[in-house]
Length: 105
Image (cartoon, rainbow, N blue to C red):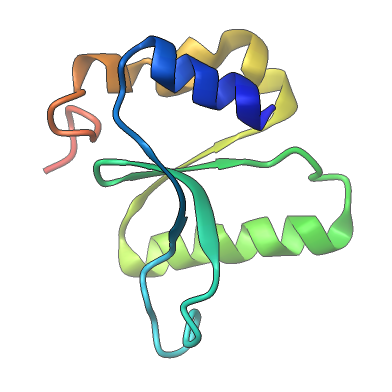
């Protein structure tokens, strides 16, 4: 799944970074060790390939909570999204320069 997403980003010439640390937060990310799968400008992307596992789901829920608290744009892709990846990430094609959705400031 991660290779499919990375290949899609590369094929569409979307600059991206892999395994970037999540922003520091004193209460939710004090050791700054948690990493996102990809960062495209100000958009964070996670591939959630094992949501049936309770510990993995909790980790993803934590990342969603962090994104809400710190107000960053997080896109979570699950295995079924790989067949229609453009629906989830297509906005990045039109916003390659800014690396964020058109409606974000």
